[in-house]
Amino acid sequence: MRLKRAATWFFFWIAAVNCRAPLVATGPLLPLIVRDLHLSATVGGTLTALPLLVMGASSIPAGVAVDRAGPRVVLILAQLGLAAFGGLRGLAPGPGVFLLAVAFLGGAIGISQPALARMAASIAPRATTATAVYANGFVIGAFLASVLSATVLVRWAGPTGWRGVMGMWALLGLGAGAGWLALPLPNPRRATARLQSGWWQALKLPGLWPYAIVFASQSAIFYGLATWLPTYYVQYGWSVAAASWPNTLMSLASIPGPWVATALARRWGGSRLPMLAFGALTFLGVVGFWLVPAWGLLWSTFPGLGTSGALTLGLAAPADLAPTERVGVVAGVLLAIGYLGAVPGALVVGGLRDLTGGFAAGLAYLAVIGVVFVAASWAVPRSAPREEAVGAP
Image (cartoon, rainbow, N blue to C red; front, side, top):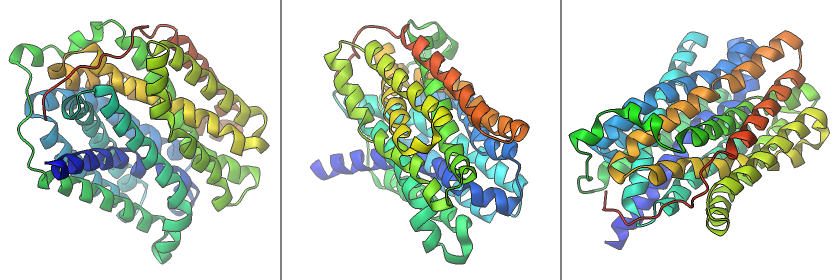
């Protein structure tokens, strides 16, 4: 029984790692991808913006499917899809196939996340604790992708270069999907027909929109920085390997974020004050990159902690706002708003890079999003996250 529970938690965490690592790996490898596929900076930004768009578009139908079929079935299909489409990127002969693979990769991630939110509300007596675990998987996935992709893995890949690295990350999805196939979990508690209908009703839930705007803001900043910081610092004069360090430290600083967020929400009686603190940290980091780029290794720690803390509180929100049987669809709605709102982040930074020849305007744009992050945090509900006992998955 203990072994089965440990395996459930392990593959729960691995699935979360797999929702971030293959996508974040694009940033450190972007200078190589752009050179090999002859991409403009605008198209380079699309490599992050496009999957975010598809993630947002797929989140609501995924949430409905999770509440009807259960999270395990959806998670298996999504993780295997991550393996297939993540690996296809490495086989792409040109930009068209690469962008298509990236779009489907975003769809697989978008389908996985409502399933993880519903699973978090099902496998633990405290949904916020389970949310912290899979939020930790997100940040560890981003950290590993940032640390390994442009240094260790690209050397292991040898002559296949960045294409081989894409194949290596695809193996993670294959392992996660196989793990959930092997776990003999019982059928989850499903929503009734009444609860399954009317996903649009989630839009009226008190507190949903502030959480969604914060989620969109932190996602836009995180993916904007994760995509362009390596290229920014290559342009600044650093080597490709050295230019991956700001991303690496940003991801390293994000590791304690889920636990810090959970502790602060309990100590401060809710999510509002922690959200404000995380928003301020993120804003200061972006302004630092913009105005004092030489201190990039310092500035990278600010949005690392800030975005991961806000991510955790946002991911915990559906379990606080809705009954267990509706967590999947509410998570889908929140993620749809959040990721669709995040689409302009990396895309606009890339477009401004093409227009101006530099990254100052793009970083100023991300700083404005940081102001929105802080402002929306004021409207986050004061009450502490609800922690209720729930059934097994």
